[in-house]
Image (cartoon, rainbow, N blue to C red):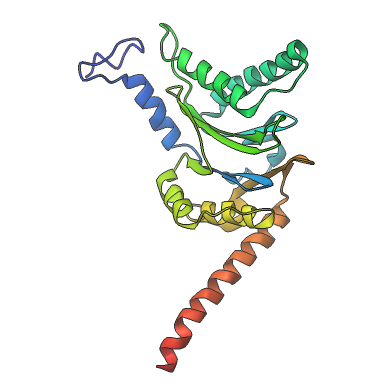
Length: 249
Protein backbone atom coordinates (compact mmCIF):
# COMPACT_ATOMS: atom_id res chain seq x y z
CA UNK A 1 0.00 0.00 0.00
CA UNK A 2 2.84 2.41 0.84
CA UNK A 3 3.63 3.10 -2.82
CA UNK A 4 0.07 3.33 -4.09
CA UNK A 5 -0.89 6.29 -1.89
CA UNK A 6 1.76 8.61 -3.33
CA UNK A 7 0.19 9.38 -6.71
CA UNK A 8 -3.45 10.35 -7.18
CA UNK A 9 -3.60 8.72 -10.64
CA UNK A 10 -2.48 5.23 -9.53
CA UNK A 11 -4.96 2.58 -8.43
CA UNK A 12 -3.93 0.05 -5.81
CA UNK A 13 -4.27 -3.64 -6.85
CA UNK A 14 -7.55 -3.92 -4.94
CA UNK A 15 -9.09 -0.93 -6.78
CA UNK A 16 -8.56 1.89 -4.25
CA UNK A 17 -7.47 5.47 -4.89
CA UNK A 18 -5.89 6.14 -1.52
CA UNK A 19 -5.61 9.93 -1.91
CA UNK A 20 -9.38 10.12 -2.41
CA UNK A 21 -9.93 7.98 0.67
CA UNK A 22 -7.60 10.25 2.67
CA UNK A 23 -9.65 13.24 1.47
CA UNK A 24 -12.80 11.50 2.74
CA UNK A 25 -11.01 11.06 6.07
CA UNK A 26 -10.33 14.82 6.16
CA UNK A 27 -14.09 15.34 5.72
CA UNK A 28 -14.85 12.93 8.58
CA UNK A 29 -12.59 14.98 10.85
CA UNK A 30 -14.18 18.29 9.81
CA UNK A 31 -17.02 20.11 11.54
CA UNK A 32 -20.47 18.51 11.38
CA UNK A 33 -22.88 20.00 8.82
CA UNK A 34 -26.55 19.16 8.36
CA UNK A 35 -29.15 20.06 5.76
CA UNK A 36 -32.92 19.58 6.05
CA UNK A 37 -35.41 20.19 3.23
CA UNK A 38 -38.91 21.28 4.24
CA UNK A 39 -41.92 22.03 2.06
CA UNK A 40 -41.27 25.78 1.98
CA UNK A 41 -37.99 26.12 3.89
CA UNK A 42 -34.49 24.65 3.66
CA UNK A 43 -32.20 24.74 6.69
CA UNK A 44 -28.42 24.42 6.83
CA UNK A 45 -26.70 24.00 10.18
CA UNK A 46 -23.02 23.61 10.98
CA UNK A 47 -20.96 23.01 14.07
CA UNK A 48 -18.60 25.91 14.73
CA UNK A 49 -15.59 26.07 16.98
CA UNK A 50 -15.71 28.78 19.60
CA UNK A 51 -14.00 31.92 18.28
CA UNK A 52 -10.95 33.40 20.01
CA UNK A 53 -11.75 36.29 22.34
CA UNK A 54 -10.33 38.96 20.01
CA UNK A 55 -11.55 37.39 16.76
CA UNK A 56 -14.49 38.83 14.82
CA UNK A 57 -16.78 35.78 14.58
CA UNK A 58 -18.58 37.26 11.53
CA UNK A 59 -15.42 36.70 9.48
CA UNK A 60 -15.64 32.92 9.99
CA UNK A 61 -18.68 31.76 8.02
CA UNK A 62 -19.26 28.13 7.08
CA UNK A 63 -22.56 28.72 5.27
CA UNK A 64 -22.34 30.93 2.18
CA UNK A 65 -24.44 32.11 -0.75
CA UNK A 66 -23.50 30.96 -4.25
CA UNK A 67 -26.35 32.94 -5.84
CA UNK A 68 -29.52 34.67 -4.63
CA UNK A 69 -31.37 31.34 -4.52
CA UNK A 70 -28.56 28.84 -3.75
CA UNK A 71 -26.43 28.32 -0.63
CA UNK A 72 -23.67 25.93 0.40
CA UNK A 73 -22.35 24.47 3.65
CA UNK A 74 -19.29 22.27 3.83
CA UNK A 75 -17.24 20.00 6.06
CA UNK A 76 -13.51 19.56 5.67
CA UNK A 77 -10.67 21.91 4.74
CA UNK A 78 -11.86 25.53 4.75
CA UNK A 79 -9.11 26.78 2.42
CA UNK A 80 -10.18 24.21 -0.20
CA UNK A 81 -13.78 25.32 0.31
CA UNK A 82 -12.90 28.94 -0.44
CA UNK A 83 -11.43 28.00 -3.83
CA UNK A 84 -14.41 25.80 -4.74
CA UNK A 85 -16.93 28.45 -3.61
CA UNK A 86 -15.27 31.16 -5.72
CA UNK A 87 -15.30 28.93 -8.81
CA UNK A 88 -18.96 28.06 -8.24
CA UNK A 89 -19.93 31.73 -7.80
CA UNK A 90 -18.20 32.65 -11.05
CA UNK A 91 -20.07 29.84 -12.83
CA UNK A 92 -23.41 31.10 -11.44
CA UNK A 93 -22.71 34.63 -12.73
CA UNK A 94 -21.37 33.36 -16.06
CA UNK A 95 -24.55 31.30 -16.56
CA UNK A 96 -26.72 34.38 -15.86
CA UNK A 97 -24.70 36.44 -18.33
CA UNK A 98 -24.72 33.81 -21.09
CA UNK A 99 -28.19 32.27 -20.77
CA UNK A 100 -29.93 35.19 -19.01
CA UNK A 101 -31.42 32.76 -16.51
CA UNK A 102 -30.30 31.69 -13.02
CA UNK A 103 -28.73 28.25 -12.58
CA UNK A 104 -30.74 25.36 -11.18
CA UNK A 105 -29.54 23.68 -7.98
CA UNK A 106 -28.79 20.49 -9.90
CA UNK A 107 -26.74 22.38 -12.50
CA UNK A 108 -24.40 24.00 -9.98
CA UNK A 109 -24.17 20.73 -8.02
CA UNK A 110 -23.07 18.94 -11.20
CA UNK A 111 -20.52 21.70 -11.80
CA UNK A 112 -19.04 21.43 -8.28
CA UNK A 113 -19.02 17.60 -8.39
CA UNK A 114 -17.33 17.76 -11.83
CA UNK A 115 -14.60 20.00 -10.43
CA UNK A 116 -14.05 17.66 -7.49
CA UNK A 117 -13.87 14.66 -9.81
CA UNK A 118 -11.40 16.43 -12.12
CA UNK A 119 -9.01 16.76 -9.19
CA UNK A 120 -9.02 12.99 -8.64
CA UNK A 121 -7.89 12.17 -12.18
CA UNK A 122 -5.03 14.57 -12.94
CA UNK A 123 -1.35 14.29 -12.05
CA UNK A 124 0.25 16.99 -9.92
CA UNK A 125 -2.94 17.87 -8.01
CA UNK A 126 -4.73 16.50 -4.96
CA UNK A 127 -8.46 16.02 -4.28
CA UNK A 128 -10.47 18.75 -2.58
CA UNK A 129 -10.65 17.76 1.09
CA UNK A 130 -14.26 18.71 1.58
CA UNK A 131 -17.83 17.51 1.23
CA UNK A 132 -20.59 20.02 0.44
CA UNK A 133 -24.30 20.35 1.14
CA UNK A 134 -25.92 22.51 -1.55
CA UNK A 135 -29.45 23.85 -1.10
CA UNK A 136 -31.74 26.14 -3.05
CA UNK A 137 -35.03 26.69 -4.84
CA UNK A 138 -35.40 25.69 -8.47
CA UNK A 139 -35.99 28.94 -10.41
CA UNK A 140 -38.45 27.19 -12.78
CA UNK A 141 -40.50 24.96 -10.46
CA UNK A 142 -39.93 26.86 -7.15
CA UNK A 143 -39.35 23.51 -5.43
CA UNK A 144 -36.71 23.23 -2.67
CA UNK A 145 -33.71 20.97 -3.29
CA UNK A 146 -30.84 19.56 -1.23
CA UNK A 147 -27.76 17.89 -2.73
CA UNK A 148 -24.53 16.49 -1.33
CA UNK A 149 -21.15 16.15 -3.07
CA UNK A 150 -18.00 14.43 -1.78
CA UNK A 151 -14.26 14.51 -2.67
CA UNK A 152 -14.62 11.68 -5.21
CA UNK A 153 -16.97 13.84 -7.30
CA UNK A 154 -20.17 11.89 -6.68
CA UNK A 155 -23.37 13.78 -5.88
CA UNK A 156 -26.91 12.84 -4.86
CA UNK A 157 -30.21 14.48 -3.85
CA UNK A 158 -31.56 14.15 -0.30
CA UNK A 159 -34.51 15.09 1.90
CA UNK A 160 -32.13 15.50 4.85
CA UNK A 161 -28.48 14.62 5.25
CA UNK A 162 -25.34 15.26 7.28
CA UNK A 163 -21.62 15.28 6.60
CA UNK A 164 -18.47 15.76 8.64
CA UNK A 165 -17.74 14.63 12.19
CA UNK A 166 -20.20 12.07 13.59
CA UNK A 167 -22.34 12.37 10.45
CA UNK A 168 -23.51 8.75 10.85
CA UNK A 169 -25.07 9.55 14.25
CA UNK A 170 -26.83 12.63 12.83
CA UNK A 171 -28.04 10.68 9.77
CA UNK A 172 -29.49 7.93 12.01
CA UNK A 173 -31.30 10.60 14.05
CA UNK A 174 -32.71 12.17 10.86
CA UNK A 175 -33.83 8.79 9.50
CA UNK A 176 -35.81 8.17 12.70
CA UNK A 177 -37.27 11.66 13.06
CA UNK A 178 -37.60 13.11 9.55
CA UNK A 179 -41.04 13.96 8.23
CA UNK A 180 -42.26 16.61 5.78
CA UNK A 181 -42.24 19.84 7.78
CA UNK A 182 -42.44 23.55 7.11
CA UNK A 183 -41.24 26.78 8.67
CA UNK A 184 -40.15 26.62 12.30
CA UNK A 185 -40.51 22.82 12.55
CA UNK A 186 -37.86 22.35 9.84
CA UNK A 187 -35.46 24.64 11.73
CA UNK A 188 -36.10 22.73 14.96
CA UNK A 189 -35.40 19.38 13.32
CA UNK A 190 -32.04 20.60 11.94
CA UNK A 191 -30.98 22.02 15.31
CA UNK A 192 -32.11 18.88 17.17
CA UNK A 193 -30.01 16.81 14.77
CA UNK A 194 -26.92 18.96 15.40
CA UNK A 195 -27.42 18.86 19.17
CA UNK A 196 -26.96 15.07 18.96
CA UNK A 197 -23.20 15.67 18.47
CA UNK A 198 -22.55 19.31 19.43
CA UNK A 199 -21.93 20.26 23.04
CA UNK A 200 -22.59 23.69 24.59
CA UNK A 201 -25.91 24.14 22.81
CA UNK A 202 -26.49 27.19 20.61
CA UNK A 203 -23.06 28.75 21.19
CA UNK A 204 -21.36 26.25 18.89
CA UNK A 205 -23.99 26.15 16.15
CA UNK A 206 -24.38 28.26 13.02
CA UNK A 207 -27.77 28.03 11.30
CA UNK A 208 -29.07 29.57 8.08
CA UNK A 209 -32.61 29.39 6.73
CA UNK A 210 -33.55 29.73 3.06
CA UNK A 211 -37.04 30.54 1.82
CA UNK A 212 -38.26 31.25 -1.71
CA UNK A 213 -39.24 34.86 -1.01
CA UNK A 214 -36.49 36.00 1.35
CA UNK A 215 -33.44 33.98 0.25
CA UNK A 216 -30.79 33.00 2.80
CA UNK A 217 -30.89 34.38 6.33
CA UNK A 218 -28.36 33.59 9.04
CA UNK A 219 -30.01 33.12 12.44
CA UNK A 220 -28.70 35.29 15.26
CA UNK A 221 -27.25 33.58 18.32
CA UNK A 222 -30.20 34.74 20.46
CA UNK A 223 -32.67 33.12 18.01
CA UNK A 224 -30.74 29.84 18.09
CA UNK A 225 -30.59 29.93 21.91
CA UNK A 226 -34.38 30.42 22.07
CA UNK A 227 -34.98 27.40 19.80
CA UNK A 228 -32.49 25.29 21.79
CA UNK A 229 -34.33 26.26 24.99
CA UNK A 230 -37.63 25.19 23.39
CA UNK A 231 -36.11 21.84 22.37
CA UNK A 232 -34.73 21.27 25.89
CA UNK A 233 -38.13 22.12 27.41
CA UNK A 234 -39.91 19.69 25.05
CA UNK A 235 -37.38 16.99 25.90
CA UNK A 236 -37.81 17.56 29.64
CA UNK A 237 -41.62 17.47 29.28
CA UNK A 238 -41.44 14.20 27.30
CA UNK A 239 -39.20 12.61 29.96
CA UNK A 240 -41.52 13.79 32.74
CA UNK A 241 -44.51 12.29 30.89
CA UNK A 242 -42.70 8.95 30.65
CA UNK A 243 -41.86 8.92 34.38
CA UNK A 244 -45.35 10.06 35.47
CA UNK A 245 -47.32 6.83 34.86
CA UNK A 246 -44.48 4.72 36.30
CA UNK A 247 -44.75 6.53 39.66
CA UNK A 248 -48.52 6.08 39.83
CA UNK A 249 -48.24 2.31 39.27
